[in-house]
Image (tube, rainbow, N blue to C red; front, side, top):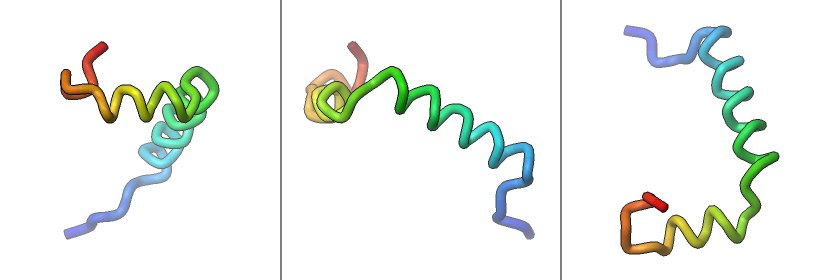
Length: 41
């Protein structure tokens, strides 16, 4: 069994991470994490 991401999966992971990092600051992420609604706005 392989548990490593493929190159395509890593590229998708990097793209999503960059997209979210550019649009949501640490304060917004923290507020969602600490919110009692399980991360739902």
